[in-house]
Amino acid sequence: MKIRNKISKLGILLLITFCSTIGFAQNNVEQTKISNYLESTIKYSNELLISSTSQKVLASDIIESNLTFSTGDGYTTIQEQYFIKSGNNLTPFNYKSDMLVSNEFIGSIKSKKFKLSTEDDGVAFQSMLKLMDNERGLGFFKEDNIWYFIRSEFFDDIEAYVITTDKEGQISMVVYEDELKKTLPETLLKPGKLVQNTDSEKTIISKKDSTFMHSYLIEKANYVFEISPLDFYSINKISTISLNKCALIITEEEEDMSSSSTHSCMLISSNDEYIKQASVNGLLEMPLFLKSLQEKYTLKTEDDARLFQYVLDDLTPVSSFDIELKTFYQKDNMWFFVREKRFDDLKGYILVVDDKNKVSYMEYTTISEESILRIKMKDPNYKVDYKFKLVKPATNKITVKQDEGLSVEISFDADMVNAKGCWIMTRFDGRDGGVYAGSSIESPFTDGIPGGALENRHHTVEYFLLKSGVEGTENALGVVKIEIEVKQ
Image (cartoon, rainbow, N blue to C red; front, side, top):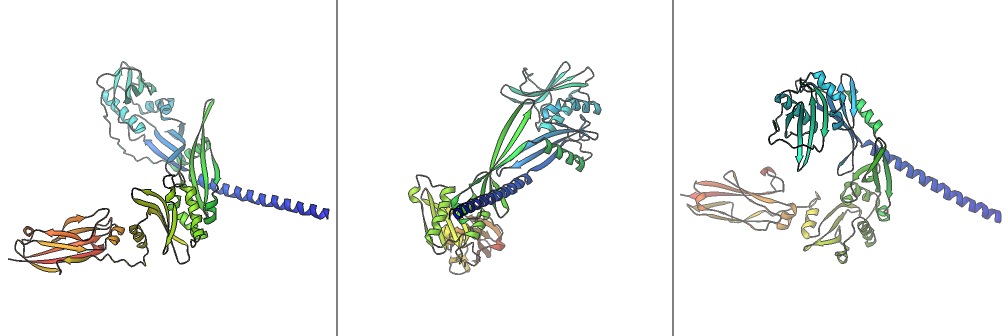
């Protein structure tokens, strides 16, 4: 008996260990899939900043190359390099300022046989700098054999390039100053003056060069992804969706120092479909979330609704001011989850369920009859009648006396029209006239045609009910046309 107990305990222990191992392995597999996905979204790009053939200062091409990562609401640079291409050689630099003061850069100027002697030479150099930093430049000045190219000035902070030349104008040294300690002359030479790039030969970055730069960036980049699963019990009960907090940690090393920066995002996934977002905000409005609900959740009873409310409480908690408003209820095939009050309007989620009690549509909106109608109108099987009809005059063909005006009144279903966001356009004798529009328009619509406008014997006035964003009358939702005969 004791032996059996020991065997039973050992079996249970092995079973627990086995299950734990499976769970750990599954987690590892999922983490690997997520990591591979994140790696696949790193974007490589390059840009030719300066072509050797489009300006007269440099004999080399200058290329900017980078690796970037999207966090859902912006891009983060993982690695960035600048390359001087001389012949078949690509020389990398971490920063533009480093490149511009390098021996390779000065050597490229010498190879082009460019000299900085005249004001026109200064404009050419200023134009080359513009290609690098996208600043038009505040101008330049010269003292003896030193040229100062002022790039920007903010209060007492002056950014400038200081160029040293020999007597013949040959450039021997370039220094970048982010805080130039020098009093500027009252007037700088050629402020903002630029030479148009010739672009006589359209230089294309070759596939070989692009591959080399990409490989260089990958080798130099120092980053890692950290993935932390976010386990919401409420979401797991009704959805197949998974949430993971992802952190991109970039480490930069320079000489004996290193620094790290962290860039976070939320990764939302379901069945190998991934979406990156800055936070969980907006998750509930995602088609992916709705799709995950349809796979696992039915909304039929109050208990089902309570489960959804738990999800809302986890992701978008109600404020303490609105806590007493929080409730849910059903009306026909719609469920309403009240979350807050803005001014006099109740706001919350409206969920539509199909005949199998699956959520077919959901939206955060004002809970009102207009919203309900607008959502119902999204169903192609829902019968819509705007009731756009002429009330006055009683017929569509009318005769008036000379100089006699005409009053027009058109009725419509205001709830339907406002739910669709419609507007009314008037056309008189084929020419577009007035517009009746607004966030909410009232029925009836009235218009007056003065007698002075009815000069000819025959006139036509048309009224078009148009959908929001639509200007063409060929797709009008309703049309009223009045033929007017004028007695002479």
